[in-house]
Image 1 (spheres, rainbow, N blue to C red):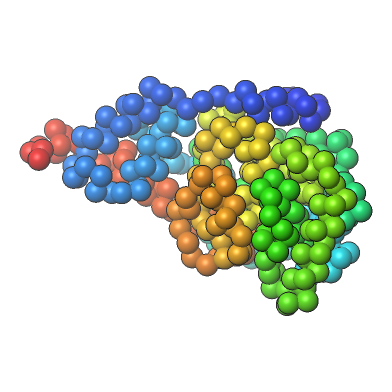
Image 2 (image 1 turned 30 degrees about the horizontal axis):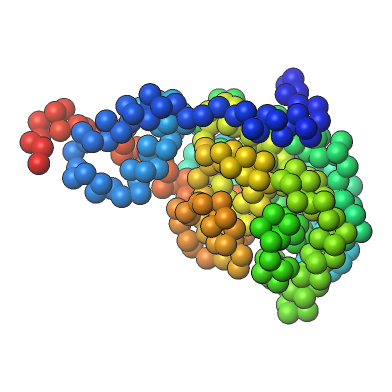
Length: 337
């Protein structure tokens, strides 16, 4: 696919010029919703989800027929600081598990009719340890963003991005602290299940990472200096989806951190994105608040892989099915109240 950007500056400019929702479709969907055989507002948030989806698809009576889930995998140099309960080798092992169909996300994707793609990004070359300087060069970040961009199926009608990367909750916490302030303790959580000593090491790594990268205050620099290839790929995919009018269901803490870097570039960059779930990771709800996103579900999930968003896909599909499939009062011959 032809590159749409060749530098970080071009990518940031692209983010600031993304298309808006289709207002004609939004109006038509609202008119249809008002005529469906139900009391006004009786489907609650399902109605809001359906209207949001219709506006971004440019269709007042849409359908979800081609969901896509993309898992991006990357390794992190900060793992040298002892921030995870698992070794970095697990990233590659889980990629094999995804490819073999053995992970939770495989079952959820199958359950809700989603195509699943798995993309590993240079697993043999972890990002640099951000406690000593930037995690990625500009060229490395551009390449990762482009990988995400190219991964989006142009025929998809809704997108979920997932991730796998030992150490990436530490990277996500560092991005959140850089963009939203507060101490490392405000943002780090137990991730894969670290003990108290591991949690302290994570907080220390984030604190030192922020000190080593004082310029990680813009969205793009926070992503480059503190993030990882899989976070960057998710960001690139979310932007590409917007250019194709494909709505996005955002997953948990790590995906939200990746999206937060886009929000820092332009708050409107996430208008086509809905929060799938509120993770059990302790700071996820706080991060969602900074992005003004309300989660569809809260199930105490913290697996990653896109699993929370894939679970929420069932609700989004239900919302759209009701909106587009129900009869109007006139069609059903039912008297309006």
